[in-house]
Length: 131
Image (cartoon, rainbow, N blue to C red; front, side):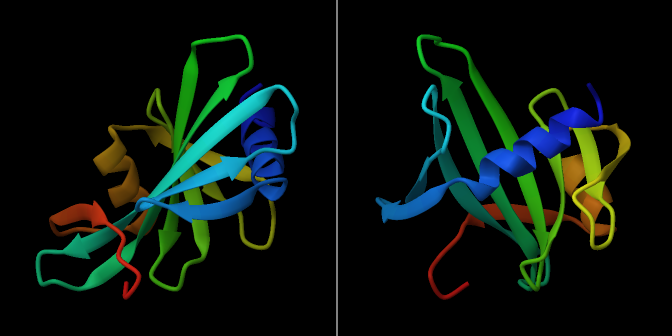
C-alpha cells in the first residue's frame, strides 16, 4: 500500500483539468466518483527569494464527507520533487520515474524543508501570477 499510494495520486493528477477561480484552482478528476480542489502556495526564504512551490490538493469521494489532503512540493524551476500526505508521510520522487521513496513522517513545514533541503526559515504565501 505504501508504494501504490504515490502511484495512485500521480495517476489522479494526470486526469485533471484546471480552471482559475478566485485565487484557487479547482480540479475536475477523471474519476466519476470523486471531486478535488487545489490551491497553490509559494515558498519564500527569509531573504525574500522564492525557494519553491506547494500545490495543495483536497479530494472527496462521491457520497462521502471525508476529505483527503496532499501537499505536492515543487522546486524553484517548478519540477515536482515529492509530496506529503495529511498524516505527514513524506515521499520523494525518484529521478525520471513516478516511483517514490518514503523519507519519513514530518509536519508539513518539516516535510517541505526535507524535500527541498532548506536549512533556513521560510514562509508559505499564496501564489501570485507574477511568482
